[in-house]
Image (tube, rainbow, N blue to C red; front, side, top):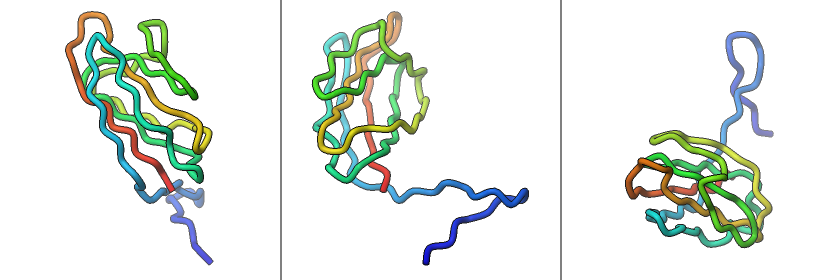
Amino acid sequence: MTRATIDNNGYPIPAFRLGTVQVASYDASVAISNAVGTATRLVRIACSTAAHVLISAAPTATTSHSYFPAGHVEIVAVRGGIDKVAAIIAVGSSAGVMTVTELV
């Protein structure tokens, strides 16, 4: 049986193994990852510059989608084998790199 790491207040600390990593460059054109693995339920997304991110089966990110500040890391739920992640630069930002890491 796996034991969870416990903090000083007795609460479990969520911990995940890092799985498959996808890297996509984005600029004024949308960068799209491949679909996440079929068993994947959570991904870690990081963008090197300010960007807007969208997750769906056929994403086309626009500046009206979720904003990610430069260097921001977010863990989000996905539908395994279905969802892809798309990014586009935010207004006033420059081209960057999005990293999508499956958490297992």
